[in-house]
Image (cartoon, rainbow, N blue to C red; front, side):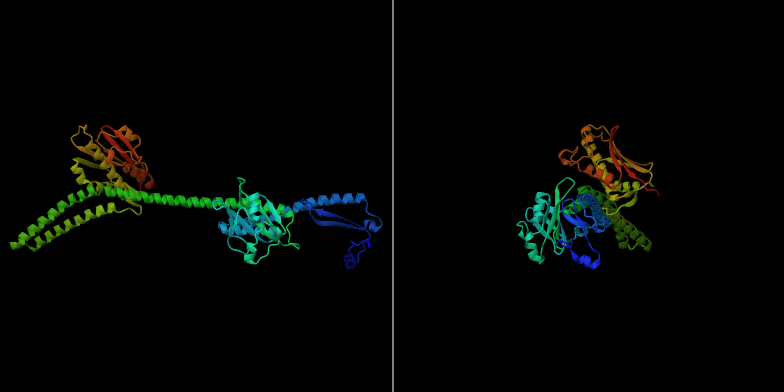
Length: 492
């Protein structure tokens, strides 16, 4: 044995152990690559030679041991992934997640650098923000080792990149970093579409080469990366969709507010008539008091007590004028916050605001109910709904030539039903036509012909049901129509 040129004497000299004969069998992985060897020395203390049967027995043992080692090595890779899993599962920042995944792949494959490339379908490029040693990069989806991997949907090992026509040297030239070896794998989503590429550069080994055994490792890593990235992408999409939904809801609410405000402005004409009508009495009274006071002054008969009473009357009338303006101004002012209010008190404000319009239409408005019933919401919006329903009733009565009534009558009743307040607004206008009733709260459904838009009751439904968590319904009753508005009650 000592005469064999392959025999390595150094170990014998170091240990003092004399080798007389030996048998050596290589360990091979599943890709038939030699990853180690088993050596046995000195059969029967070197007094017997190894036989063919010995060789077959050792080869069987090596084969069995190799399967165990491959299994243990696979377990090691899986355990390495598990070490990262706890951190990865808690990470919500997409860029930090990509860094963690890249580091995990780099560590398991024992590479110097690693990159996760993601596919941008609109631009048809592969891009990355997470590449060790460089900033954001973009690469064609069809060129370079990465592009080739993406295009062919497979795994590529390249241990001589500068001799490979597919290799893109530009990145090395920009960074000054030399690429000696590359392994890359396509990342496939649950629908089997390629969503990106994972690439490792420069194996940390003596030869700096990736082996076919690394394919098994990168496949395990690639599968985990693809699943994690896909979940992350879905989460991002959900966040994006939630944001878009929130924006659309905000736009819709804003649009509704504008429509409500515009609808209020449409009532401006009637409101101005009501303001003029309500101002006439206090202005006339103030004018009369002033005339009397001037007359008393001219006659030198104005006493101090009379002057005080006259000034008090004038002040009271001015306060009344201010209150009227404030009531109307508050109605036209958009509600910003919900607040509690008494329902009957609010409806009495509506009656006051519409008094002149009711009088000009020869109509009576009566309000009955418990004055202590309170709800919460936007008072001006509820006022707007009530005014809209009352105006519709007045229009229906004035346009119905077949009515045989002495005087138009609108009755509002407010009562409690369990934990709700029910507001009933009924009239004697002959009822709502069936074709209108079927689509009562749909846009452009109107009985007013070209004069109507059908928007009023659509807004009413939005205000009651969406802004106040209530319910609005319409019915035909004997001799007229009735609207029922149901609102949550606030206990006092």
